[in-house]
Length: 284
Image (cartoon, rainbow, N blue to C red; front, side, top):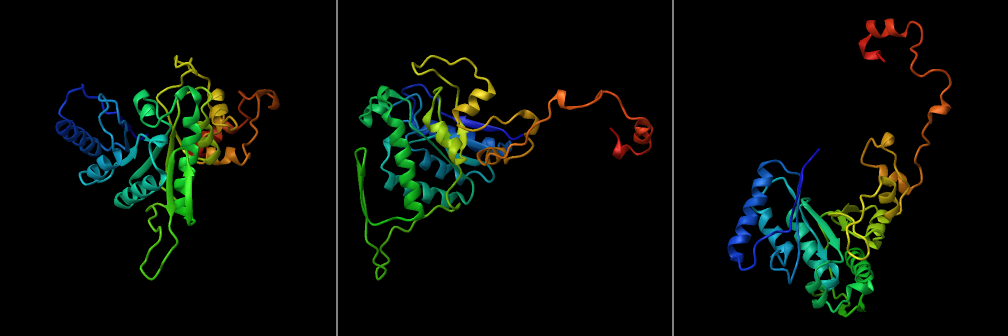
């Protein structure tokens, strides 16, 4: 098991940001020394308690002070970003990280950040904006088609290539086809968590909440799989990292139930116990 860390961060309003940033960087450096596997850095624009507004810049600085730990945005609040700018910043960061970057994405949750984007969170529009934004970023990395792109208040133009002067949208991530994507979600019927399940992306959450914001009772595992739109994977057959992919293909094995077993499963066949004593490697 590897340990991970989520840095909101959390600093009292009025703190000297130049000092808290250095404190947070020192914390990441310490985590690397303790062999933590990954650390996720939050993003908020109007929450002074959580005073990192550009986790990509912070991660760029942390990469220079660490050697092994993977660093991720926790998360890029997609409704607050123009996808053209975001695609380039994330691709650039991934090139710097050379395999140590994780791209956490989400629709956000802080009221002030929704105000900045002109979003009423009760409408739920932030989820569709998030889906359209990440799809646009992925398309820019895969095959940027010249033309005007305009949705949800953001506009950008992919220029016609001119190879005489090397003019074209060229920047792609270091990890192909893209860095590992992790999706944040906290509501009981999260569309973004469902999207993650469908596309095989990682999940990240600090708990499930009902649509009115109240804490949701701890869900059963079957409920979690239903949220991410995948068949339930029983614990008995979890033996690797590929179960989600197997579930997506609908190839989960059928488990034997007790009634399928004939005879008494507690009985040891005659002679087997003596054989096990003689050959420990073949023991029961």
